[in-house]
Image (cartoon, rainbow, N blue to C red):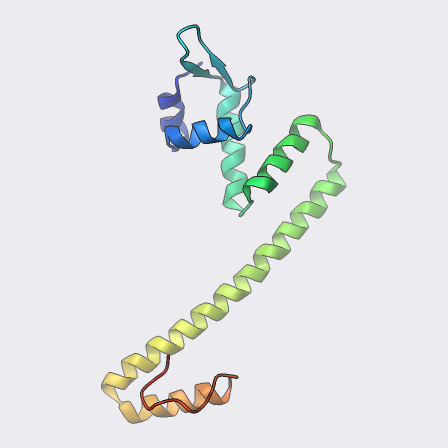
Length: 148
């Protein structure tokens, strides 16, 4: 058994975060016990549980998804096929976000290239700007030098 500060240090979390998880029902009496002096003592199961919570968070799970997944894990309600389907769905969701981020990075790189060229070679910058607008649905009639 360990106190909350020891658990927080061990898991790289704040005391506030651990208390929040407790309040949300992610940690229960298997993970934490109150002593007669009202101090919380945490079991090794709490370490495992917090590790699992961190793993779910690292793949972008919402609090609601996290609660559902942990409940199903605790009660063994899901079959392996259901878990595999969930994993595949989450993977697809993340792949979609990855494509969005790639597009955002591409846009930022173009903006950076344009603004840098604007200082060094304004004529070339204008050519790049025309090329960029030709390939997009953005209004092509912009003031000179206005990429955004």
